[in-house]
Image (tube, rainbow, N blue to C red; front, side, top):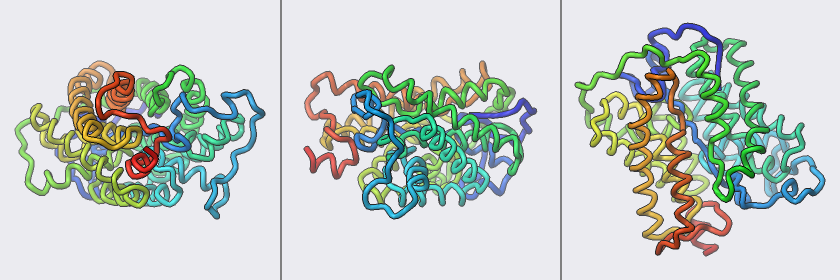
Length: 386
């Protein structure tokens, strides 16, 4: 996602990879706060009706049937477009629920009002574009064309280096988010049987940021700093918030609450993955500031969450979630420095997309205890259906 070539102030986000001594709670109150937000892009993979753009799922568009406007999902009294947009926010973390999406958006507004506004604008832009283009009605209804746009809005709010309320930032977010809808539709058949996760977001956001290089010349985090007990406790919450590029532990707790409303088991998976990522970062010698602000947690959180959504619960699935979270953190650690140094951009959710794809492909290896859910939703429903 993102913006105009303005010099990035020293207080601007040091990029999803390296943030130094930023405060976990209410980072928006510090100039350095912008840096804490970490392109937690995620973002988001499959959910809905198989709900997540897994190309193995069929749709009216895939079958060549006439394209129709998206109809509201059963059980909602909201206007169809609002329902789709709220689901789009939730789908960043696999929540096909307008209520959970609304609570997640509230968490973003709490952590950073401007970021929350651009997240909403990005989701609405992508969803409206999908409607106008006549894309798959079922996917639109489930919010699957909105979540990449949501992440574009989040990323632009942090990395463009423009002040809150900037018309240029808002226009860039709306325009960039709109591009994710047709790109997602184009990526679907290219992904084969693997969900497309947040590839559309990464493509648009990182291509845009490569123009302004927000992390170019950013100072490294202090390797000598140590984590306090409180920072250790709060780091997994900050990691969950960083999925949306928000460096705020309270926002992370609110997002977990929204997740628990949809699926308590998904909330556990998200928190667990973030904690595993933080622990892996510590073992790899990551700077304390990066761990404390959640930079090592958001990608692993998404990977663990994706495994919980796509696999039937089992000891094998739990092991895969753990191993996937560790692998995602290792990829993040190995790539973030090189990407930031050479391109001057954050690594976003590329580690999640790469490792989650590998985890999904393991379903073809006929390993004991690894069974893909017939209709991916949540651990509770996956086990009931299985």
